[in-house]
Image (cartoon, rainbow, N blue to C red; front, top):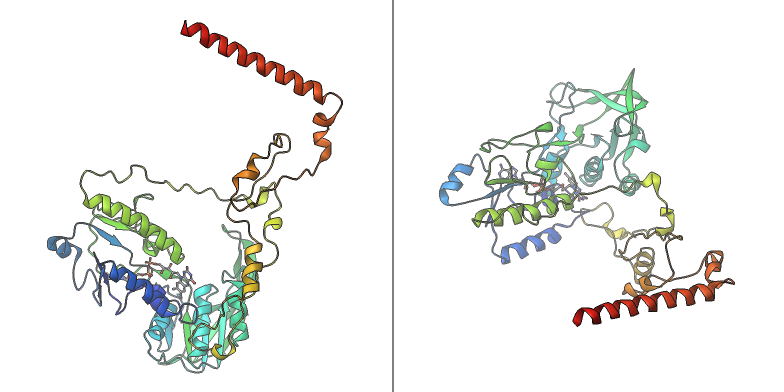
Length: 423
Ligand SMILES: Cc1cc2nc3c(=O)[nH]c(=O)nc-3n(C[C@H](O)[C@H](O)[C@H](O)COP(=O)(O)OP(=O)(O)OC[C@H]3O[C@@H](n4cnc5c(N)ncnc54)[C@H](O)[C@@H]3O)c2cc1C
């Protein structure tokens, strides 16, 4: 098995995107070393489609392919002046830094976007020596998709935020000198429920040395010879949702170039299924679909819960502590939890049995459920003694005796029938 990667090192966005202060590179390298030991060969610096084509690889004997080329290109800001020197795409800037190169961004930097990538970019810019980093986001803080913890950490490091601010033009002669920003207002909620930014027609300018756009990523298909593979909405690859097989039967596809930019775990889950498909594909006679898990996911309807979700998430999450010596360096400054924190964090969660709703009208109080949980997490406690009155009341003995007689009668009849049948 061979992995071809056009980057000089393997790992995709885990090595070339996510900054090392959030994911140390040696962690990823250790994982890749395990794959090497398992026999996977990595050929880096090879762009498939350009340096070698899929057709050539077929002729060399490769029988199946898994395309996981990610969403490697920064989406355009779509404003005039984007071609000036000093305008960066967010993932290009991060790649440069992750390759250990000095990105010449100057002292004043505007980062456009409101997602986690924008925050990674802003925090990396601070570490690259920028003195004033301003994140421009066209909606309000409440609408910003970035993780609030990351936003708080960015603020502590000196990143400034300007909300309801959309770039209108990047100004400068050859190099960026300023960014023209339009003030926005919040309008009606969009299809995702987030209030949309609405133009006000009021502008102002921010003097900057560089502008880094982090408004999304798109797939860079380059010159890949993908044959019949279909690209649908947003230029993403189309494939079967269970097998990940594309319209080109020997090409399987997954990760960001199939789903659009998501999380690492989504790409890992997809490639696991893709690997099962590839294994079956190259061994003739196997069905790609037989006994596959359709992974039908039904989202929890949080608005119609019978149980208060608050009762599961207590006490509050433990706060990560930081190693002050590593703050604002390219190293991960987050310290592991102390023993007390681990215990407190573990105590706040049910160990995966899931939330169980006991229907008071159906539970007989037999207690069998309490014997099933190996962790002794289920206990039977009578919360509503009034429900048990029926069994404790005046007629309880008669009811129990009557049931016993009936049951003994049934058993006797059954045994009699069996004896007759034997004769
Ligand atoms: C800045 C940033 C921060 C992120 N932070 C997180 C996070 O905290 N947690 C999380 O879960 N996810 C995070 N993500 C998302 C996560 O990194 C991606 O979802 C995941 O890496 C997608 O995996 P993939 O295999 O589909 O693509 P990628 O990781 O993008 O890998 C694609 C690979 O294909 C190679 N390639 C492309 N074209 C060719 C070609 N023609 N020939 C050969 N090779 C080619 C590229 O060089 C690259 O190595 C982050 C992403 C970014 C950009």
